[in-house]
Image 1 (cartoon, helix red, strand yellow):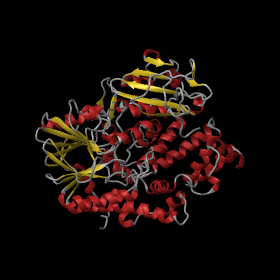
Image 2 (cartoon, one colour):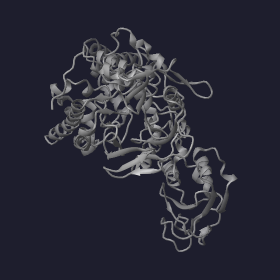
Image 3 (tube, helix red, strand yellow):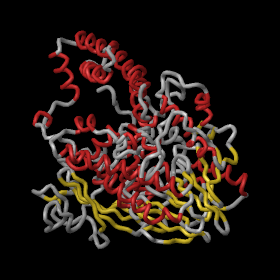
Image 4 (cartoon, one colour):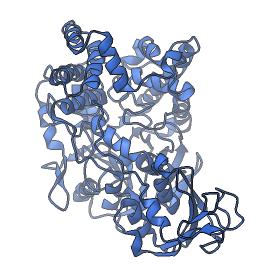
Length: 634
Protein backbone atom coordinates (compact mmCIF):
# COMPACT_ATOMS: atom_id res chain seq x y z
CA UNK A 1 0.00 0.00 0.00
CA UNK A 2 1.55 3.28 -1.07
CA UNK A 3 1.15 6.54 0.76
CA UNK A 4 -0.72 9.28 -1.04
CA UNK A 5 1.88 11.88 -1.98
CA UNK A 6 0.88 15.40 -1.14
CA UNK A 7 1.93 18.92 -1.93
CA UNK A 8 1.33 22.34 -0.36
CA UNK A 9 -1.42 22.83 -2.92
CA UNK A 10 -3.27 19.67 -1.89
CA UNK A 11 -6.64 20.64 -0.38
CA UNK A 12 -7.96 17.19 0.55
CA UNK A 13 -7.46 17.71 4.27
CA UNK A 14 -9.22 21.07 4.14
CA UNK A 15 -12.20 19.53 2.33
CA UNK A 16 -12.36 16.72 4.90
CA UNK A 17 -12.02 19.16 7.82
CA UNK A 18 -14.96 21.21 6.49
CA UNK A 19 -17.18 18.27 5.53
CA UNK A 20 -20.36 17.96 7.57
CA UNK A 21 -20.03 21.42 9.13
CA UNK A 22 -23.24 22.56 10.84
CA UNK A 23 -22.42 25.51 13.07
CA UNK A 24 -19.64 27.21 15.01
CA UNK A 25 -19.51 28.81 18.43
CA UNK A 26 -19.51 32.60 18.14
CA UNK A 27 -17.60 33.94 19.89
CA UNK A 28 -15.55 30.81 20.53
CA UNK A 29 -14.67 31.90 24.04
CA UNK A 30 -15.56 29.83 27.11
CA UNK A 31 -15.41 31.14 30.68
CA UNK A 32 -15.62 29.50 34.08
CA UNK A 33 -18.05 30.45 36.84
CA UNK A 34 -15.83 33.38 37.90
CA UNK A 35 -15.65 34.81 34.40
CA UNK A 36 -12.08 33.66 33.75
CA UNK A 37 -11.46 32.65 30.13
CA UNK A 38 -10.62 28.94 29.97
CA UNK A 39 -10.74 28.61 26.18
CA UNK A 40 -10.35 31.17 23.40
CA UNK A 41 -10.21 29.76 19.90
CA UNK A 42 -10.79 33.22 18.42
CA UNK A 43 -7.25 34.06 19.52
CA UNK A 44 -6.10 31.97 16.56
CA UNK A 45 -7.90 34.09 13.94
CA UNK A 46 -4.48 35.32 12.83
CA UNK A 47 -4.12 31.98 11.03
CA UNK A 48 -6.49 33.29 8.36
CA UNK A 49 -3.71 35.63 7.20
CA UNK A 50 -0.73 34.83 5.01
CA UNK A 51 2.01 32.81 6.66
CA UNK A 52 4.74 34.91 8.27
CA UNK A 53 8.41 33.88 8.19
CA UNK A 54 8.30 33.06 11.91
CA UNK A 55 6.34 29.80 11.45
CA UNK A 56 7.31 26.68 9.50
CA UNK A 57 5.01 26.47 6.44
CA UNK A 58 3.86 22.93 7.22
CA UNK A 59 3.08 23.74 10.84
CA UNK A 60 1.14 26.82 9.69
CA UNK A 61 -0.94 24.59 7.40
CA UNK A 62 -1.59 22.10 10.20
CA UNK A 63 -2.53 24.86 12.64
CA UNK A 64 -5.07 26.27 10.20
CA UNK A 65 -6.71 22.86 9.97
CA UNK A 66 -6.70 22.30 13.74
CA UNK A 67 -8.15 25.75 14.45
CA UNK A 68 -11.39 24.99 12.62
CA UNK A 69 -14.13 24.82 15.23
CA UNK A 70 -17.75 23.89 15.48
CA UNK A 71 -20.25 21.04 15.24
CA UNK A 72 -19.77 18.54 12.42
CA UNK A 73 -21.82 15.58 11.22
CA UNK A 74 -19.53 12.59 10.66
CA UNK A 75 -22.24 10.20 9.48
CA UNK A 76 -25.86 9.49 10.33
CA UNK A 77 -26.24 9.83 14.11
CA UNK A 78 -22.54 10.56 14.75
CA UNK A 79 -21.36 14.12 15.42
CA UNK A 80 -18.15 15.80 16.58
CA UNK A 81 -17.41 19.10 18.26
CA UNK A 82 -13.93 20.22 17.23
CA UNK A 83 -11.83 23.24 18.10
CA UNK A 84 -13.15 23.66 21.65
CA UNK A 85 -10.11 22.05 23.25
CA UNK A 86 -6.98 20.11 22.34
CA UNK A 87 -9.17 17.09 21.54
CA UNK A 88 -12.52 16.35 19.91
CA UNK A 89 -15.74 15.39 21.65
CA UNK A 90 -17.79 12.82 19.73
CA UNK A 91 -21.55 12.44 20.23
CA UNK A 92 -23.35 9.27 19.14
CA UNK A 93 -27.13 9.37 19.12
CA UNK A 94 -29.06 6.51 20.69
CA UNK A 95 -32.69 5.61 21.21
CA UNK A 96 -33.26 7.99 24.15
CA UNK A 97 -30.32 10.37 24.17
CA UNK A 98 -26.69 10.69 23.20
CA UNK A 99 -23.48 8.88 24.14
CA UNK A 100 -20.47 11.16 24.69
CA UNK A 101 -17.02 9.95 23.69
CA UNK A 102 -13.95 11.65 25.22
CA UNK A 103 -15.43 14.72 26.95
CA UNK A 104 -12.43 17.07 26.54
CA UNK A 105 -10.20 18.47 29.30
CA UNK A 106 -12.37 20.92 31.22
CA UNK A 107 -15.96 20.78 32.42
CA UNK A 108 -16.70 24.25 31.03
CA UNK A 109 -15.67 23.46 27.44
CA UNK A 110 -17.37 20.06 27.59
CA UNK A 111 -20.61 21.75 28.65
CA UNK A 112 -20.22 24.33 25.86
CA UNK A 113 -19.66 21.56 23.32
CA UNK A 114 -22.76 19.70 24.48
CA UNK A 115 -24.79 22.91 24.33
CA UNK A 116 -23.66 23.53 20.75
CA UNK A 117 -24.74 20.01 19.81
CA UNK A 118 -28.10 20.40 21.53
CA UNK A 119 -28.73 23.67 19.70
CA UNK A 120 -29.00 21.65 16.50
CA UNK A 121 -30.09 18.21 17.64
CA UNK A 122 -32.42 18.99 20.52
CA UNK A 123 -32.08 18.69 24.28
CA UNK A 124 -31.05 15.04 24.29
CA UNK A 125 -29.81 13.79 27.64
CA UNK A 126 -26.48 12.07 27.99
CA UNK A 127 -27.12 8.32 28.28
CA UNK A 128 -23.53 7.07 28.41
CA UNK A 129 -19.88 8.05 28.28
CA UNK A 130 -16.87 6.36 26.69
CA UNK A 131 -13.26 7.14 27.57
CA UNK A 132 -10.99 5.83 24.83
CA UNK A 133 -7.88 6.17 27.01
CA UNK A 134 -6.61 7.74 30.25
CA UNK A 135 -5.09 11.00 29.03
CA UNK A 136 -6.51 14.15 30.56
CA UNK A 137 -7.89 15.56 27.30
CA UNK A 138 -10.18 12.52 27.01
CA UNK A 139 -11.89 12.52 30.37
CA UNK A 140 -11.30 15.76 32.31
CA UNK A 141 -14.53 17.45 31.22
CA UNK A 142 -16.84 14.57 32.11
CA UNK A 143 -18.61 16.37 34.96
CA UNK A 144 -19.61 19.04 32.46
CA UNK A 145 -21.81 16.58 30.54
CA UNK A 146 -22.90 14.01 33.14
CA UNK A 147 -25.54 15.03 35.68
CA UNK A 148 -26.96 11.58 36.54
CA UNK A 149 -25.78 8.00 36.81
CA UNK A 150 -24.99 6.66 33.35
CA UNK A 151 -22.76 3.82 32.15
CA UNK A 152 -19.16 4.93 31.69
CA UNK A 153 -17.04 2.58 29.58
CA UNK A 154 -13.25 2.51 29.43
CA UNK A 155 -10.46 0.07 28.62
CA UNK A 156 -9.34 -2.21 31.43
CA UNK A 157 -6.79 -0.62 33.79
CA UNK A 158 -8.03 2.87 32.87
CA UNK A 159 -8.08 4.19 36.43
CA UNK A 160 -4.68 2.78 37.33
CA UNK A 161 -3.02 4.49 34.40
CA UNK A 162 -5.00 7.72 34.76
CA UNK A 163 -3.67 8.01 38.30
CA UNK A 164 -0.08 6.94 37.67
CA UNK A 165 0.31 9.42 34.82
CA UNK A 166 -1.78 12.36 35.94
CA UNK A 167 -1.28 12.17 39.71
CA UNK A 168 1.86 10.26 40.68
CA UNK A 169 4.01 12.03 38.08
CA UNK A 170 1.51 14.84 37.66
CA UNK A 171 3.62 17.59 39.21
CA UNK A 172 6.46 17.16 36.74
CA UNK A 173 4.13 16.50 33.80
CA UNK A 174 2.01 19.57 34.46
CA UNK A 175 5.10 21.77 34.64
CA UNK A 176 6.61 20.31 31.49
CA UNK A 177 3.16 20.52 29.92
CA UNK A 178 3.46 24.33 30.04
CA UNK A 179 6.34 23.98 27.57
CA UNK A 180 4.69 21.17 25.63
CA UNK A 181 1.42 22.96 24.89
CA UNK A 182 2.85 26.48 24.85
CA UNK A 183 0.14 27.52 27.29
CA UNK A 184 2.11 30.54 28.54
CA UNK A 185 2.86 31.80 25.02
CA UNK A 186 0.63 34.49 23.54
CA UNK A 187 -1.17 33.19 20.43
CA UNK A 188 0.32 34.76 17.35
CA UNK A 189 2.90 34.39 14.59
CA UNK A 190 5.75 34.86 17.06
CA UNK A 191 4.20 32.72 19.77
CA UNK A 192 1.66 29.93 19.99
CA UNK A 193 0.26 28.59 16.72
CA UNK A 194 -0.71 25.13 17.97
CA UNK A 195 0.64 21.76 19.00
CA UNK A 196 0.06 19.90 15.74
CA UNK A 197 -2.49 17.67 17.46
CA UNK A 198 -4.74 20.60 18.29
CA UNK A 199 -4.27 24.22 19.28
CA UNK A 200 -3.60 23.99 23.00
CA UNK A 201 -5.25 22.83 26.22
CA UNK A 202 -8.22 24.42 27.94
CA UNK A 203 -7.57 25.64 31.49
CA UNK A 204 -10.88 25.09 33.24
CA UNK A 205 -12.13 22.72 35.93
CA UNK A 206 -10.93 19.13 35.72
CA UNK A 207 -12.97 16.10 36.77
CA UNK A 208 -12.86 12.33 36.69
CA UNK A 209 -15.72 9.90 37.17
CA UNK A 210 -14.56 6.27 37.43
CA UNK A 211 -15.71 3.87 34.73
CA UNK A 212 -18.61 1.57 35.53
CA UNK A 213 -17.91 -0.94 32.74
CA UNK A 214 -14.46 -2.25 31.80
CA UNK A 215 -13.68 -3.33 28.27
CA UNK A 216 -11.46 -6.34 28.83
CA UNK A 217 -11.10 -8.02 25.43
CA UNK A 218 -11.06 -7.35 21.72
CA UNK A 219 -14.40 -8.31 20.19
CA UNK A 220 -16.37 -7.32 23.28
CA UNK A 221 -19.73 -5.86 22.26
CA UNK A 222 -21.67 -3.50 24.48
CA UNK A 223 -24.99 -1.81 23.79
CA UNK A 224 -25.54 1.68 25.16
CA UNK A 225 -28.88 3.39 24.57
CA UNK A 226 -29.62 0.98 21.73
CA UNK A 227 -26.26 1.57 19.99
CA UNK A 228 -23.92 -1.39 19.48
CA UNK A 229 -20.21 -0.81 20.10
CA UNK A 230 -17.64 -3.42 19.08
CA UNK A 231 -14.30 -2.82 20.83
CA UNK A 232 -10.64 -3.46 20.05
CA UNK A 233 -8.20 -3.19 22.95
CA UNK A 234 -4.90 -1.56 21.97
CA UNK A 235 -2.80 -1.45 25.16
CA UNK A 236 0.65 0.11 24.99
CA UNK A 237 -0.06 2.15 21.87
CA UNK A 238 -0.73 5.86 22.34
CA UNK A 239 -1.60 5.12 25.99
CA UNK A 240 -0.99 2.15 28.30
CA UNK A 241 -4.74 1.45 28.19
CA UNK A 242 -6.53 2.39 24.98
CA UNK A 243 -9.22 1.08 22.66
CA UNK A 244 -10.72 1.58 19.24
CA UNK A 245 -14.34 0.74 18.48
CA UNK A 246 -16.62 0.13 15.53
CA UNK A 247 -20.23 1.19 15.28
CA UNK A 248 -21.23 -1.76 13.07
CA UNK A 249 -24.74 -0.52 12.39
CA UNK A 250 -23.42 2.85 11.20
CA UNK A 251 -20.22 1.64 9.52
CA UNK A 252 -18.19 4.14 11.50
CA UNK A 253 -14.80 3.37 13.07
CA UNK A 254 -13.36 5.28 16.03
CA UNK A 255 -9.55 5.14 16.08
CA UNK A 256 -9.15 6.93 19.44
CA UNK A 257 -5.66 8.47 19.21
CA UNK A 258 -4.02 5.57 17.42
CA UNK A 259 -4.24 6.99 13.89
CA UNK A 260 -4.45 10.77 13.60
CA UNK A 261 -3.30 13.21 10.92
CA UNK A 262 0.29 13.41 12.12
CA UNK A 263 3.16 11.29 13.31
CA UNK A 264 2.43 10.69 16.99
CA UNK A 265 4.73 10.37 20.00
CA UNK A 266 6.37 7.19 21.23
CA UNK A 267 7.46 9.27 24.21
CA UNK A 268 5.69 12.57 24.60
CA UNK A 269 7.97 15.48 25.48
CA UNK A 270 5.91 16.30 28.56
CA UNK A 271 6.83 12.84 29.85
CA UNK A 272 4.99 9.50 29.91
CA UNK A 273 5.57 5.78 29.91
CA UNK A 274 7.45 4.83 26.72
CA UNK A 275 5.03 3.43 24.18
CA UNK A 276 5.41 0.20 22.24
CA UNK A 277 6.02 1.02 18.57
CA UNK A 278 5.92 -2.63 17.55
CA UNK A 279 2.64 -3.21 19.38
CA UNK A 280 1.21 0.01 17.95
CA UNK A 281 1.94 -1.22 14.44
CA UNK A 282 0.40 -4.61 15.25
CA UNK A 283 -2.85 -3.12 16.50
CA UNK A 284 -3.19 -0.89 13.43
CA UNK A 285 -2.94 -3.97 11.22
CA UNK A 286 -5.44 -5.73 13.47
CA UNK A 287 -7.82 -2.79 13.00
CA UNK A 288 -7.56 -3.21 9.22
CA UNK A 289 -8.31 -6.91 9.55
CA UNK A 290 -11.18 -6.50 12.01
CA UNK A 291 -12.91 -3.39 10.79
CA UNK A 292 -11.84 -1.98 7.41
CA UNK A 293 -14.40 -3.86 5.34
CA UNK A 294 -17.18 -2.76 7.69
CA UNK A 295 -16.37 0.96 7.84
CA UNK A 296 -17.20 3.82 5.50
CA UNK A 297 -15.73 6.51 7.75
CA UNK A 298 -12.94 6.58 10.34
CA UNK A 299 -12.83 9.31 12.98
CA UNK A 300 -10.52 9.95 15.89
CA UNK A 301 -10.28 11.94 19.10
CA UNK A 302 -8.21 14.60 17.30
CA UNK A 303 -8.29 16.11 13.84
CA UNK A 304 -10.87 15.35 11.13
CA UNK A 305 -12.37 12.10 9.76
CA UNK A 306 -11.37 10.04 6.72
CA UNK A 307 -14.11 8.79 4.42
CA UNK A 308 -14.08 5.81 2.05
CA UNK A 309 -12.82 2.25 2.40
CA UNK A 310 -9.63 2.65 0.37
CA UNK A 311 -8.60 5.87 2.08
CA UNK A 312 -9.20 4.33 5.52
CA UNK A 313 -7.04 1.33 4.66
CA UNK A 314 -4.29 3.56 3.27
CA UNK A 315 -4.29 5.73 6.40
CA UNK A 316 -4.09 2.72 8.70
CA UNK A 317 -1.47 0.92 6.62
CA UNK A 318 0.76 3.98 6.34
CA UNK A 319 0.55 4.64 10.06
CA UNK A 320 1.25 0.94 10.68
CA UNK A 321 4.36 1.14 8.52
CA UNK A 322 5.64 4.29 10.23
CA UNK A 323 5.71 2.75 13.71
CA UNK A 324 7.05 -0.59 12.47
CA UNK A 325 9.82 1.16 10.56
CA UNK A 326 10.84 3.40 13.47
CA UNK A 327 10.92 0.36 15.77
CA UNK A 328 12.81 -1.96 13.46
CA UNK A 329 15.37 0.54 12.17
CA UNK A 330 16.17 1.72 15.67
CA UNK A 331 16.72 -1.87 16.78
CA UNK A 332 18.86 -2.59 13.70
CA UNK A 333 21.15 0.36 14.35
CA UNK A 334 21.09 -0.17 18.11
CA UNK A 335 22.38 -3.71 17.58
CA UNK A 336 25.20 -2.30 15.47
CA UNK A 337 26.30 -0.17 18.40
CA UNK A 338 24.82 3.19 17.50
CA UNK A 339 23.65 5.44 20.34
CA UNK A 340 20.31 7.28 20.56
CA UNK A 341 21.74 10.60 19.35
CA UNK A 342 23.41 8.87 16.42
CA UNK A 343 20.34 6.87 15.46
CA UNK A 344 18.23 10.01 15.51
CA UNK A 345 20.47 11.46 12.79
CA UNK A 346 20.47 8.28 10.68
CA UNK A 347 16.80 7.27 10.45
CA UNK A 348 14.60 8.80 7.76
CA UNK A 349 11.25 7.59 6.51
CA UNK A 350 10.80 6.27 2.99
CA UNK A 351 10.05 9.39 0.90
CA UNK A 352 6.92 7.65 -0.38
CA UNK A 353 5.74 7.40 3.23
CA UNK A 354 7.00 10.77 4.37
CA UNK A 355 5.11 12.35 1.48
CA UNK A 356 1.77 11.87 3.22
CA UNK A 357 0.70 14.83 5.36
CA UNK A 358 -0.46 12.50 8.14
CA UNK A 359 3.04 11.07 8.63
CA UNK A 360 4.64 14.50 9.15
CA UNK A 361 6.17 15.31 12.50
CA UNK A 362 3.74 17.99 13.59
CA UNK A 363 3.38 16.41 17.05
CA UNK A 364 5.77 13.49 17.33
CA UNK A 365 9.02 13.42 15.38
CA UNK A 366 11.30 10.79 13.91
CA UNK A 367 14.13 12.27 15.98
CA UNK A 368 12.65 11.92 19.43
CA UNK A 369 10.66 8.79 18.58
CA UNK A 370 13.73 6.71 17.74
CA UNK A 371 15.28 7.85 21.03
CA UNK A 372 12.14 6.57 22.74
CA UNK A 373 12.49 3.15 21.11
CA UNK A 374 16.08 3.00 22.33
CA UNK A 375 14.99 4.01 25.82
CA UNK A 376 12.29 1.34 25.89
CA UNK A 377 14.85 -1.40 25.24
CA UNK A 378 18.09 -0.13 26.77
CA UNK A 379 17.18 2.79 29.02
CA UNK A 380 18.99 6.08 29.54
CA UNK A 381 22.57 4.74 29.38
CA UNK A 382 24.19 4.46 25.96
CA UNK A 383 26.95 2.14 27.18
CA UNK A 384 29.76 4.71 27.06
CA UNK A 385 31.46 4.74 30.49
CA UNK A 386 32.06 8.48 30.16
CA UNK A 387 28.30 8.94 30.42
CA UNK A 388 27.87 6.65 33.39
CA UNK A 389 28.74 9.13 36.14
CA UNK A 390 28.74 12.59 34.63
CA UNK A 391 28.54 15.68 36.76
CA UNK A 392 25.08 17.24 37.06
CA UNK A 393 24.31 20.15 34.70
CA UNK A 394 25.60 23.06 36.78
CA UNK A 395 28.88 21.41 37.72
CA UNK A 396 29.45 20.20 34.15
CA UNK A 397 28.66 23.64 32.76
CA UNK A 398 31.14 25.40 35.03
CA UNK A 399 33.89 23.04 33.99
CA UNK A 400 33.09 23.30 30.27
CA UNK A 401 33.07 27.08 30.42
CA UNK A 402 36.38 27.12 32.30
CA UNK A 403 37.94 24.75 29.75
CA UNK A 404 36.82 26.97 26.90
CA UNK A 405 38.46 30.07 28.31
CA UNK A 406 35.65 31.60 30.31
CA UNK A 407 32.18 33.01 29.73
CA UNK A 408 33.21 35.71 27.24
CA UNK A 409 34.90 33.14 25.02
CA UNK A 410 31.84 30.87 25.13
CA UNK A 411 29.49 33.71 24.19
CA UNK A 412 31.74 34.79 21.34
CA UNK A 413 31.89 31.25 19.99
CA UNK A 414 28.14 30.85 20.34
CA UNK A 415 27.53 34.05 18.36
CA UNK A 416 29.73 32.71 15.56
CA UNK A 417 27.83 29.43 15.43
CA UNK A 418 24.50 31.27 15.56
CA UNK A 419 25.50 33.62 12.74
CA UNK A 420 26.75 30.66 10.68
CA UNK A 421 23.36 28.99 11.08
CA UNK A 422 24.43 26.21 13.44
CA UNK A 423 21.72 26.96 15.97
CA UNK A 424 21.87 23.48 17.49
CA UNK A 425 25.47 23.84 18.66
CA UNK A 426 24.96 27.47 19.62
CA UNK A 427 22.19 26.28 21.94
CA UNK A 428 24.48 23.62 23.44
CA UNK A 429 27.21 26.14 24.15
CA UNK A 430 24.86 28.74 25.56
CA UNK A 431 23.10 26.23 27.77
CA UNK A 432 26.47 25.63 29.44
CA UNK A 433 27.01 29.38 29.76
CA UNK A 434 23.63 29.90 31.44
CA UNK A 435 24.02 26.97 33.80
CA UNK A 436 27.52 28.11 34.74
CA UNK A 437 26.29 31.65 35.44
CA UNK A 438 22.50 32.01 35.42
CA UNK A 439 22.81 35.69 36.38
CA UNK A 440 24.53 36.54 33.09
CA UNK A 441 22.07 38.71 31.17
CA UNK A 442 24.13 38.38 27.98
CA UNK A 443 24.12 34.59 28.10
CA UNK A 444 20.40 34.42 28.83
CA UNK A 445 19.47 36.82 26.03
CA UNK A 446 21.71 35.14 23.49
CA UNK A 447 20.30 31.71 24.35
CA UNK A 448 16.77 33.13 24.21
CA UNK A 449 17.53 34.46 20.73
CA UNK A 450 18.81 31.05 19.59
CA UNK A 451 15.78 29.27 21.07
CA UNK A 452 13.50 31.76 19.31
CA UNK A 453 15.11 31.08 15.96
CA UNK A 454 14.92 27.32 16.50
CA UNK A 455 11.25 27.67 17.41
CA UNK A 456 10.43 29.72 14.35
CA UNK A 457 11.96 27.01 12.14
CA UNK A 458 10.32 23.98 13.78
CA UNK A 459 7.74 21.93 11.86
CA UNK A 460 6.87 20.15 15.10
CA UNK A 461 4.38 22.01 17.31
CA UNK A 462 5.70 20.88 20.72
CA UNK A 463 9.31 21.53 19.63
CA UNK A 464 8.31 25.09 18.71
CA UNK A 465 6.51 25.49 22.03
CA UNK A 466 9.47 24.16 24.02
CA UNK A 467 11.91 26.49 22.30
CA UNK A 468 9.69 29.58 22.54
CA UNK A 469 8.64 28.93 26.13
CA UNK A 470 12.30 28.46 27.05
CA UNK A 471 13.09 31.81 25.43
CA UNK A 472 10.16 33.40 27.25
CA UNK A 473 11.36 32.18 30.65
CA UNK A 474 14.97 33.16 29.99
CA UNK A 475 13.78 36.71 29.32
CA UNK A 476 10.98 37.03 31.83
CA UNK A 477 11.60 34.43 34.51
CA UNK A 478 9.68 31.30 35.39
CA UNK A 479 5.95 31.71 35.14
CA UNK A 480 3.97 30.94 38.29
CA UNK A 481 0.41 29.73 38.58
CA UNK A 482 0.88 26.37 36.93
CA UNK A 483 -1.59 23.70 37.93
CA UNK A 484 -0.74 21.32 40.72
CA UNK A 485 -2.23 17.86 41.06
CA UNK A 486 -4.17 18.99 44.12
CA UNK A 487 -5.76 21.85 42.19
CA UNK A 488 -6.85 19.78 39.22
CA UNK A 489 -9.87 18.00 40.66
CA UNK A 490 -8.39 14.60 39.85
CA UNK A 491 -7.73 13.79 43.52
CA UNK A 492 -11.45 13.28 44.11
CA UNK A 493 -11.33 10.13 41.99
CA UNK A 494 -8.44 8.47 43.83
CA UNK A 495 -8.98 5.23 45.70
CA UNK A 496 -7.73 4.90 49.28
CA UNK A 497 -4.75 2.91 48.00
CA UNK A 498 -3.92 5.62 45.48
CA UNK A 499 -4.16 8.35 48.12
CA UNK A 500 -1.72 6.44 50.29
CA UNK A 501 0.53 5.97 47.26
CA UNK A 502 0.48 9.75 46.93
CA UNK A 503 1.71 10.04 50.52
CA UNK A 504 4.53 7.64 49.71
CA UNK A 505 5.90 9.56 46.74
CA UNK A 506 6.01 12.78 48.79
CA UNK A 507 8.06 11.40 51.71
CA UNK A 508 11.39 13.21 52.10
CA UNK A 509 13.45 10.03 52.31
CA UNK A 510 16.60 11.27 54.06
CA UNK A 511 14.54 13.29 56.55
CA UNK A 512 12.54 10.14 57.28
CA UNK A 513 15.52 7.89 58.02
CA UNK A 514 15.42 8.46 61.81
CA UNK A 515 11.66 7.84 61.97
CA UNK A 516 9.97 4.45 62.14
CA UNK A 517 6.41 3.53 63.01
CA UNK A 518 3.34 1.54 62.05
CA UNK A 519 0.15 3.50 61.39
CA UNK A 520 -3.28 2.05 60.67
CA UNK A 521 -5.88 3.94 58.65
CA UNK A 522 -9.54 3.25 59.45
CA UNK A 523 -11.37 4.86 56.52
CA UNK A 524 -14.88 4.71 57.87
CA UNK A 525 -17.02 5.75 54.92
CA UNK A 526 -15.10 3.42 52.58
CA UNK A 527 -15.32 0.54 55.03
CA UNK A 528 -11.59 -0.06 54.58
CA UNK A 529 -8.68 -0.48 56.94
CA UNK A 530 -5.10 -0.15 55.74
CA UNK A 531 -1.80 -0.62 57.49
CA UNK A 532 1.22 1.56 56.69
CA UNK A 533 4.81 1.28 57.83
CA UNK A 534 7.50 3.94 57.66
CA UNK A 535 10.85 2.17 57.63
CA UNK A 536 14.25 3.32 56.35
CA UNK A 537 12.61 6.30 54.62
CA UNK A 538 10.14 4.10 52.72
CA UNK A 539 6.40 4.38 53.31
CA UNK A 540 4.64 1.14 52.40
CA UNK A 541 1.00 0.19 52.92
CA UNK A 542 -1.46 -2.62 52.30
CA UNK A 543 -5.07 -3.57 53.12
CA UNK A 544 -5.17 -4.94 56.65
CA UNK A 545 -8.79 -5.42 57.75
CA UNK A 546 -7.82 -7.55 60.78
CA UNK A 547 -5.24 -5.16 62.23
CA UNK A 548 -5.09 -5.43 66.05
CA UNK A 549 -5.69 -2.45 68.29
CA UNK A 550 -3.01 0.24 68.58
CA UNK A 551 -0.46 0.57 71.37
CA UNK A 552 1.34 -2.79 71.43
CA UNK A 553 3.72 -3.60 74.28
CA UNK A 554 7.44 -3.12 74.02
CA UNK A 555 7.55 0.40 72.65
CA UNK A 556 9.05 3.38 74.40
CA UNK A 557 6.23 5.62 75.72
CA UNK A 558 5.45 8.52 73.41
CA UNK A 559 7.77 7.37 70.63
CA UNK A 560 5.85 4.56 68.94
CA UNK A 561 9.07 2.61 68.52
CA UNK A 562 10.25 -0.70 69.92
CA UNK A 563 13.18 -0.59 72.27
CA UNK A 564 16.33 -1.38 70.35
CA UNK A 565 14.69 -1.63 66.90
CA UNK A 566 13.33 1.78 66.03
CA UNK A 567 10.30 0.11 64.46
CA UNK A 568 6.93 0.37 66.17
CA UNK A 569 5.53 -3.02 65.31
CA UNK A 570 4.21 -4.21 68.65
CA UNK A 571 5.34 -6.96 70.99
CA UNK A 572 7.20 -9.80 69.35
CA UNK A 573 7.02 -8.33 65.85
CA UNK A 574 9.94 -8.60 63.45
CA UNK A 575 11.39 -5.11 62.81
CA UNK A 576 9.97 -3.39 59.75
CA UNK A 577 7.33 -6.01 58.98
CA UNK A 578 4.26 -4.14 60.23
CA UNK A 579 3.04 -7.21 62.09
CA UNK A 580 1.56 -7.02 65.56
CA UNK A 581 -0.16 -3.92 66.94
CA UNK A 582 0.18 -0.52 65.31
CA UNK A 583 1.67 2.47 67.07
CA UNK A 584 -1.44 4.46 66.19
CA UNK A 585 -4.74 4.12 64.38
CA UNK A 586 -6.39 7.12 62.79
CA UNK A 587 -10.16 7.06 62.18
CA UNK A 588 -11.27 9.30 59.32
CA UNK A 589 -13.32 9.60 56.14
CA UNK A 590 -11.84 9.41 52.68
CA UNK A 591 -12.30 13.16 52.15
CA UNK A 592 -10.34 13.79 55.35
CA UNK A 593 -7.55 11.56 54.09
CA UNK A 594 -7.37 13.75 50.99
CA UNK A 595 -7.39 16.81 53.23
CA UNK A 596 -4.37 15.49 55.11
CA UNK A 597 -2.52 14.90 51.84
CA UNK A 598 -3.32 18.39 50.62
CA UNK A 599 -2.38 20.04 53.92
CA UNK A 600 -5.87 21.49 54.48
CA UNK A 601 -6.77 19.35 57.50
CA UNK A 602 -4.98 19.71 60.86
CA UNK A 603 -4.15 16.25 62.23
CA UNK A 604 -5.31 17.16 65.74
CA UNK A 605 -8.91 17.34 64.47
CA UNK A 606 -8.98 13.58 63.91
CA UNK A 607 -9.67 10.68 66.26
CA UNK A 608 -6.43 8.80 66.89
CA UNK A 609 -5.89 5.74 69.07
CA UNK A 610 -2.41 5.10 70.41
CA UNK A 611 0.56 7.41 69.94
CA UNK A 612 -0.86 10.79 68.96
CA UNK A 613 2.52 11.99 67.65
CA UNK A 614 2.70 9.50 64.79
CA UNK A 615 0.37 11.25 62.36
CA UNK A 616 1.93 14.74 62.78
CA UNK A 617 5.37 13.20 62.37
CA UNK A 618 4.30 11.59 59.10
CA UNK A 619 2.78 14.80 57.77
CA UNK A 620 5.93 16.70 58.71
CA UNK A 621 7.92 14.46 56.39
CA UNK A 622 5.86 15.25 53.29
CA UNK A 623 7.64 17.21 50.60
CA UNK A 624 5.54 19.48 48.38
CA UNK A 625 5.90 19.59 44.58
CA UNK A 626 7.12 22.78 42.93
CA UNK A 627 4.66 23.73 40.17
CA UNK A 628 7.11 26.21 38.63
CA UNK A 629 10.48 24.47 38.89
CA UNK A 630 13.26 25.78 36.65
CA UNK A 631 13.83 24.09 33.29
CA UNK A 632 16.07 26.33 31.18
CA UNK A 633 18.01 27.63 34.18
CA UNK A 634 19.50 25.83 37.19
